[in-house]
Length: 389
Image 1 (tube, rainbow, N blue to C red):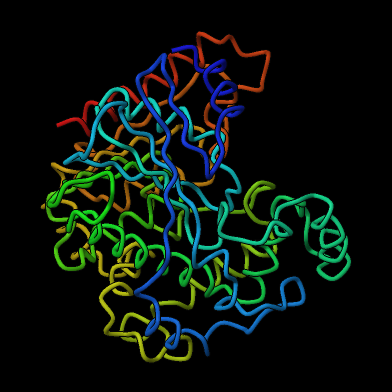
Image 2 (image 1 turned 120 degrees about the vertical axis):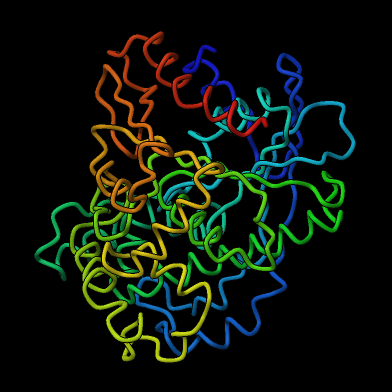
């Protein structure tokens, strides 16, 4: 595949609410609308734990309508009516558009013959007001951030919204991930019942998850509500580490001051009393999703359970990491997997400069296109093979 040209082609075509048929690939892109219907009790539970708005966004999180009803897209083979297999693609932290994922979803769809749903994390992609990610509205907040937080060294219009929100309450990282899992739980039930227009009842659902999406997928898998994921496969890319080995300070993700707060909250304070700091969320120590989250926080938290889980499920999890990834490094994934790392994990390296945020830098004209094609195929060919079965 000519990765660079294909990415540019799909970028020009893609719209959230537009159905598109890609005749050269016998693949179509279909839009759908998701509306939360299982969040009422959770919203009540967390409303008092997260600040009711910030200077950046005075609107309380619960009232941000874009996060409650939103569009999502699926790549599907042309000509099918309803399918009995599905792949859900989860993206990375602080993503605002699907541009880099369009080739990922198309390739997986074409090679596996399965529809691929691109599902947005809560308060990401199109689940936020536009003012959170447009430069004109965000740049004044960069100045505000720099003047009010002297230790900031990498504040940008791209990361200022997430940085301000997480600095106000690091708990938002957890609640956003948890809300996403509840959304996925709802979506899987709709799919399994045959209520989704693309799928037959009892459809098998697998996952391709990247970066923080991989952590969300792991927590979802470990929690396995209603045993919906007992037969699912998970392919994780640039993800899978325990939290304490991650480093989210990056111009595209969040600034260093925000990351310091987030890291301190989860790697140092969270999980200290009965699996959780009672002063943080005293009513959630027995919650199954919270226990799953704690499993992926630190090496010495629930280590025996985590090792046992990956040992028992090694046949349905594959992880690919990148050698030069400093955001979610390979050694953090090895710690998470324990003795199963030699079976589940494969570390790759590419003969060009890349980052966690941009593993296939198609905009860099100094990189030979064929090198990008080979690198892309080295990840997505095994992913397609693994998820095809």
